Image 1: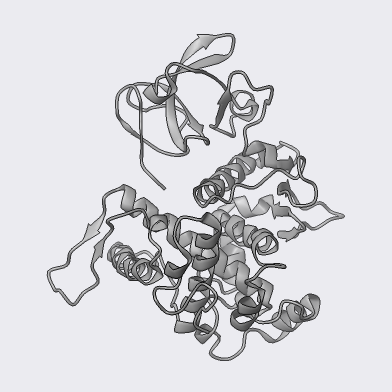
Image 2 (image 1 turned 90 degrees about the vertical axis):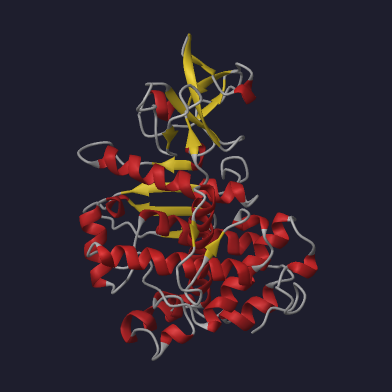
Length: 370
């Protein structure tokens, strides 16, 4: 994610901020410009942009910003919409009692980070309300005595149990499931992988290569999950999969790998935006010199080299302050090929490079190493 600054005082601000801590200016995110903008009150619930690119245009806060305080996105004053592009995708929320409002706010914040990445990749989803067959929707639900909410995806509807927004609950489940990593953003990225599998892979030129790398998704899903939870992952699972859950079924392998690719891309993008470089004294240690935005390069090999250098330092820094590794994963050659495949699929969709660049000189876009 790129860095943001207040239009009034140039103070650095962040994606989730609603006001500048230095000058007090009201902040709002403009998805069409992918920027945090500073505003001044213009009366009648409208706000005048201080960003020179907007030439004083008027905006209004998303109703979930002005009324519910769970959003920070804005809309053009002239639109009839009351909800921003992110909040339009949320179709169900829990009863706002107890801690539920806080959980809802955390869920929406994580969802907006997912949408930022998707918009950057030219994968902006359409609301299911506007396109029932191919659109995307979210529902945030809580367990009831008569109903247990399962986080998952079904034909464009992503459901999250709001308990996942409780760090204590999430950490307990992470330990029980023997997961090295479990976050709200990770959930959103994983479930979006299922949605984009239907959009990008099913019925496409990629399906045969997908099956060579990930397996045949037509295998019985319920039986595969039952076997996974009963028997666990196969021996030496990390030679083939990014996580134990990825070994359950080819759909889950794709979704876990998709989420991991988004993790990598957004983290490298942030490092690039911050001007981060790594130049150790020893020339044989990992170096990081990000000369362009990660999405702008067709070279998966360069991206992986940057990623290994960055995670080496992140883990070393965490260990220095007694914290667990920030990046507790090992990427085998097979896993890297799966990530390479996702890279090729996204770049092909994004239309930013010529097809012969998609596989780092290891064959055409139709020939990912298996």
